[in-house]
Image 1 (cartoon, rainbow, N blue to C red):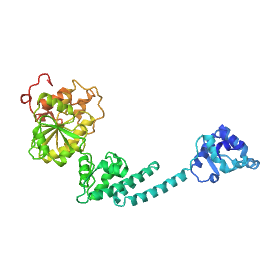
Image 2: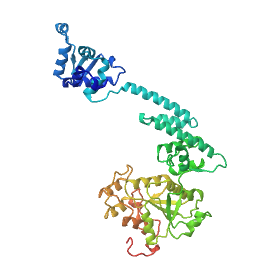
Image 3: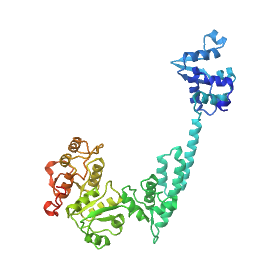
Image 4: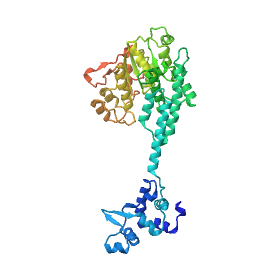
Length: 447
């Protein structure tokens, strides 16, 4: 029965303001039981004196009054209401309780107990399907189960498991000898219908990587370049062309086409992941300055900077990791400089920790000088490992210091003294790059 179909006496009960707490309590209980008839007594909090008096006037029989025992007992502000007696007094059937509670509260009655049971059954069915669908990668199936799933995502997990199973089967064929490789976009298109279906920055993409590692018997990796190398070994080529590291003045001593391109020079050279993995150059410089922003490369061109410099463009991508690792493999030492803000300090710490780079122009001495002309961008929370000296220097203006700052550019390209991120001024040294006497004169730039 719907609220609109209730008889007049039941509607009167539902609309009585003094009984509102009673129907709120009934509503809560109905959401916890399978059958309304199961409710015999309800504990009600917040029932007014008028509501208690009203219920007693209906339910306290002459016998109860003589014995001094009311049908409505009170204990600590909680009233015990004999619901079955109340319904019988007004000739209302127990099956009408849900409609009365919905009319009184304005909320539908949802059987949460039944809902939980149904959800548990749906999950049990899902996990059985996942384990069967992903039988070729049982460890992945267990990880998916361990991650849990919301009711609203059950169908999504089921569908994604089927996509992953299709991809695993196709990759197994790609691993066969003399089978040509396939791009990740093509694999996604064929298995999911969407070229972006296995994008590596999405959960399903990361699960694909875990599946490939499990099938190949290799450890799971999450570093972008290592992920792409893992996929490539299994015949899947993730995007190798759209991103690049821009380099200038790099010397190369090998015989590959990329070596030739670097030797030709003539300006900045973009190196893609394809270049670095298929035709890797043999880098011959002792050290390379790596910067965060392309504008520094432009500034280097403007002043005739002649030493090796490379730009990784913000947070490290697969191509950036590949370039930095390749430089280390060639015996080249790295010096890194980035923006002095939260992101820049995080990137610098990664480059230092992963590749042993020295970090330049991001110390408290340089920042103090650069703060004479700060940016207008407020400084966000700094990484916890930021040195106290640098925190103090940045706190003076609470503004980010970017590489476009003249002080920073002069340190990187003009041979000004620098201090590494150990922030110890006694260790100040000149940048391992040309001084003003070794670069082409360009009046008015950076000076």
